[in-house]
Length: 143
Image 1 (cartoon, rainbow, N blue to C red):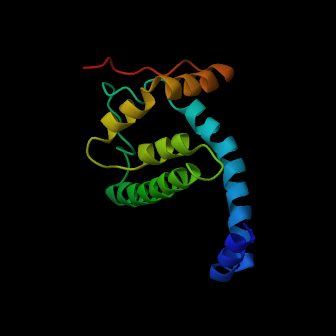
Image 2: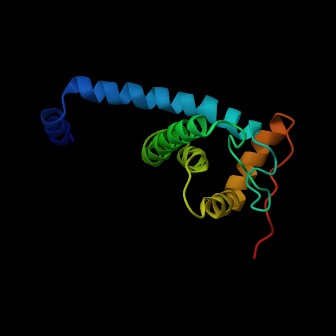
């Protein structure tokens, strides 16, 4: 084990390892706070594919475009952070779900519904929502 640690320290400086550890701890605590807040504030029919969603549809096209760019960049950051949290401390799957819901791509709504439709994940989300007095999420019936 000491050989592995010595090899890692030769490849990556100790300051970088400490920084990554601190960033991981901050990310873990941040997701414990942010993800429940986001999931509780979503409308109950947010993941229902039968309900249309229009983001910033009544705003100026330039504002809408810049908002979409920012939203997609933030979504990619959440998706990558969620993927990293599959191996590091944090709520990886929920963070990835938030990232996917922020990004725009074809068939996104169906992917979201499939992810949220997993019984374990839906149960966790609805338990969070119930704790804060919010109604459970509704999903479109399967095909």
